[in-house]
Image (cartoon, rainbow, N blue to C red; front, side, top):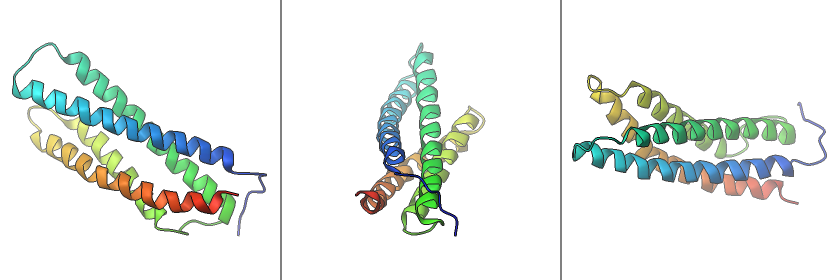
Amino acid sequence: MFTMNLPSFLWLWKIAAWSMGLSLLAYLLLVITGVWMFRARTLQQEGLSWLHSFHYMIGSCMVSLVLLLLLIGIIGTLGHFGSLGHSPHLIAGLTAVVLVLLSAGSALLINARRLWARRIHISANIVLFFGFAWVSLTGWSVVQKYLP
């Protein structure tokens, strides 16, 4: 069994807490800007390219934060326990990561000839709401294990 001999993982969990909070904020901003873009497209409004760019920028930030959370989870769990898979949080976290990557990948494919990509993007984000709820609930029980 491999374990890291570090004095405390509290600093790691602080980064994880901030990353999760910012991921949820990014998700909320993405929902708001996504609905705004849908409404603008439905009403055939012009001149909102800045909104599309902002949506992509926030999405990129969320992908980065979620990948950071994955890295923190792997490092922290291996460092503390020496192996992975000690709770349902692993499956919840991997599910959230896959959904975020599916959402981001499908977003890059959206155009007038690939309407299916928009449907995948929106569907992945609806399911991601439940994924974030699941990872938050399971994460809370994991955090309790590490607190002194």
